Length: 153
DNA sequence: GCCAACGTTGGC
DNA sequence: GCCAACGTTGGC
Image 1 (spheres, rainbow, N blue to C red):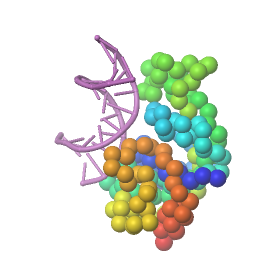
Image 2: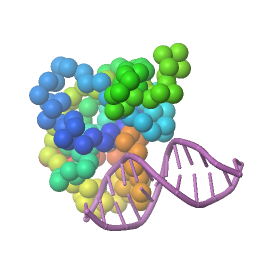
Image 3: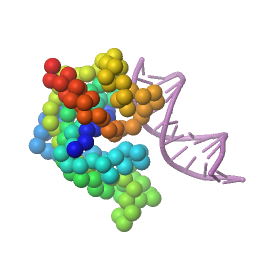
Image 4: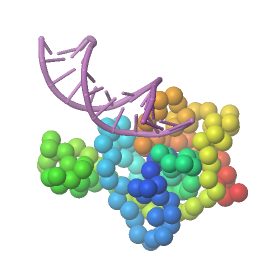
């Protein structure tokens, strides 16, 4: 079992959106970065847990936990001509992009980015690296457990 | 809205 | 395979 951090812009999908429908897995579509895709396709497994992180908004930081609820499957949005995430180079036979379903686990008290930076034990968090833009990053188990504890406080 | 950092594209 | 140009990301 692995641990992850998944970024989302809350005006797109927020932790509250997920919490509002806790029994409905949400398809995580629109990932168009090869590294993030490879994490989903090659390493994510059902039951993995991910810190849910709000970016591109006023209150940036970790806001909750979600569970990976499916194996990776071809992202359907790549096949829809005219759609924002359409990819003309993708075919049904050789899809380029993948999705997983995620399911709400818990919402906690916001852990702002400044608090992440202030904690020496979290120094290796990929999200804190200069210029880091990956929307899906692996997280060490110890880091995950620490942040899960903070979320519950 | 700015801008640094990064990823992708495409001409050569 | 290099690398300049371009587009995107994301914190501020």
